[in-house]
Length: 102
Image (cartoon, rainbow, N blue to C red; front, side, top):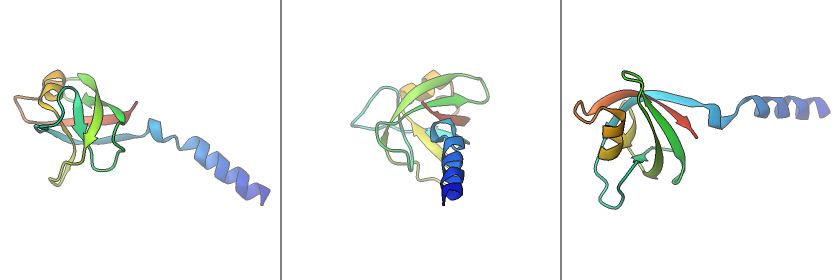
């Protein structure tokens, strides 16, 4: 029993959720209730802060999850227009990004 507990403790210690990254496509959307550097994610809890990095240009921004989405296959996050501008993809509409929990 002690060996099992030790193995479980070791696994939990080596799987830090905050260090996990997610790669995929970001788009932007307009949220009528919030403004600023915000985003929508399918599963992250509301209030979670994430660092989103545009892989094409290296720009990054810290965003707060305030909504659910995106609901289009292949996309992992929807960001506000202000965030899309900060990340440098507002004109393109889509970007390949990495998401890190902060």
